[in-house]
Length: 345
Image 1: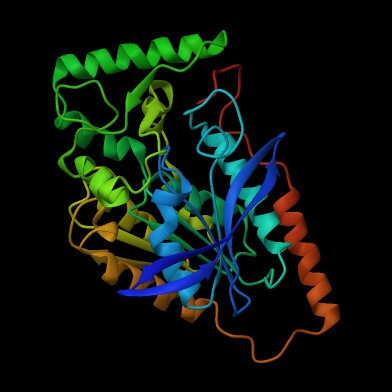
Image 2: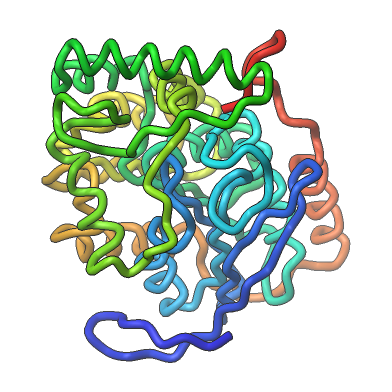
């Protein structure tokens, strides 16, 4: 379908089409933006942030610069399948990335050796783990990444009132136990004022709707998450995998980020062999607000340096050998995040 969108103040007509790929036994929905330069950027939003509010602004900028883009919804969210809804099981989301990479490499007009990944917030943390597992990726961008949930937790607690924190914890435990017997998730808002039972109450967390959903542009986006998933994010530490990332990795961090504090992301970026760090002032959602131009230009500069135009096509022999290596990377079964019988999400 063709939809106009605004890039740097001008109305541009872009072709993007809804496509689907299979992850596990479930269909994931995605927007495919055909590009002109053969490279592809795969994108996903943050905690229960669906593909439109989570990726549209940056996907449009990348596509206008010539890149193919594949922006997808995780299972259990948005237009993708999967029951129950509004859960964010980390193991399944990492598997969704593997399926998305394999699908993107099969698309017409995409050079499978020139694929990059982009993630924001929780997905920014996923980007580190996915890049560590896929050395054949050309580049990876982690924007306002949650590199260490344990490092972020003290700041989250500091901005919540004790009674509300206790009520949230009780709700999350009840939700996790209910998940074991198949009960529907107990949901909490993604953000709220201190004293409310919600996922986050830091000052910059409250900017989420203004940043991602201005003028209610995406009325179908459900801004809630299963309490069990919100609690488990606090134990997620993807930055520990940064030293294993072999492709160029850009960590774009916000200096006053209260949701995913910059320090953990900076430390992860320094551990990555080909890590680059860009700092911008502002809170967690600044790349979608006043810092959008600075963030977008930094990311486009990074992509241009690490996904350059091909001067000549590779020989069929070397291309075939490389394709076999990439196929092996994306078809290996994903590593398990935990063992034992636990509720998803």
